[in-house]
Image 1 (cartoon, rainbow, N blue to C red):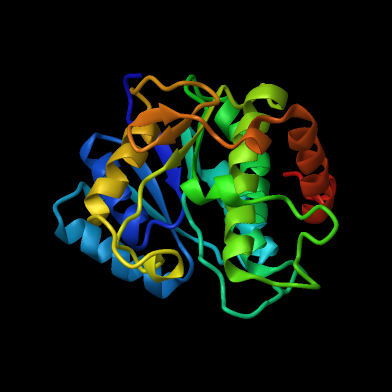
Image 2 (cartoon, one colour):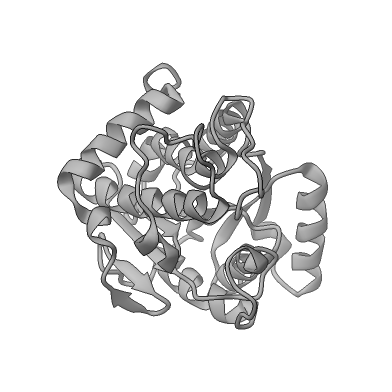
Length: 273
């Protein structure tokens, strides 16, 4: 790959995403750095430039994942501006509110931001990824996915919302998507999931009291997102090392069932570019 590879990194305005963007820019990548709002984007891009990165390879993009219309607009903008997309890093995520909140699309907020929005974005960008030799998707998961289960009859937690269970479900779904991408979607050549570790970001209070430095969490994400790096296709990584994902994450029947459900919930067939 002679020219600068292009990476779309969601949730790049702070935490692991911000540090991952800095590392990828230092490696020579062109980074489409996603933020939730224009204000967050401007502030984070200013910080990146001040850190010494090449501003010519930094391209800000904005979308609020609680609004699937904005996810579609983001995909359209990326597809129109990039001749190809080499790597998509689905990093944006939330721990979720203490009480159940629905998005304007009618989904529980955690499942939409952490899973349905990344799912839709990935599907809409398949053709852009297909134009790359690399064509890789990196899903930033969590070891907590092992304690999750897909609540098939109540994905949006209408009856008994639990913040921790909603988060675990969303990360299990994202890890299952990695399996689906390797088995069902030939336009995406490589897909991996990664647990970056228990890291001291703004999300830490949602699941722990103490975390390691942000740079340590960003390093394995940036390594997997580096187009020059070799990865274990379909693999789940705990930090730098391949590890075993939850059995549900690789169960063919459950993975296919979730894939079909996700198409319906995002109205994917009606929203293709």
